[in-house]
Length: 214
Image (cartoon, rainbow, N blue to C red):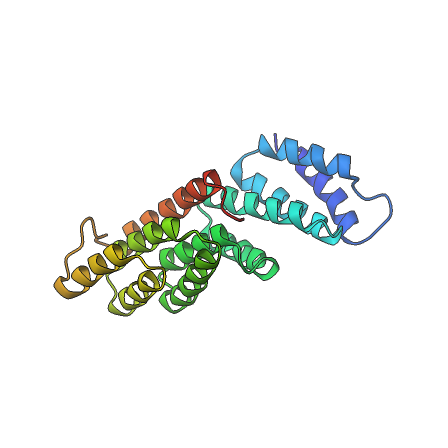
């Protein structure tokens, strides 16, 4: 199945280098259809290159769509660090990308990059509030607080929930912070990593189904 990849990636490479005879729009669509049937490990690379190709062609909408597909494939293939890199690329192009900001926060938490997670969380909450997606973001932030029993991060989640007007959720986090009790708290870093990745994948599906931004 993956034998088509080198040939198609060569075509994309020609297009990205600005050479004549690069992949046409029809060829790019054919590549996307083939990639949908490939394994996640092969699929993400093609989707990422498609995003680059459409970005070069000034088709920002399609570029963001394929970068999002690349992130999904990377998460499915359990590759959080490349997924973080693609997510950051999306955010540079589209700073208000609610779905991607949520995913990036979960990926920061999966790697226990708490300083980065706090920054990602604040940006995510700001975008969610501006995009009137507080009802979705409140549930995500509450779950983050449930899984991460770190005093500094809990303080940030309470601030975020208060900012979005999520009073009940904020009160729950205050109880956790005061009493130190967490249901289903991961017992080790490996389990935490897996749960955060699962949450990232789940948030992608939920937010896409609700029509959230990329």
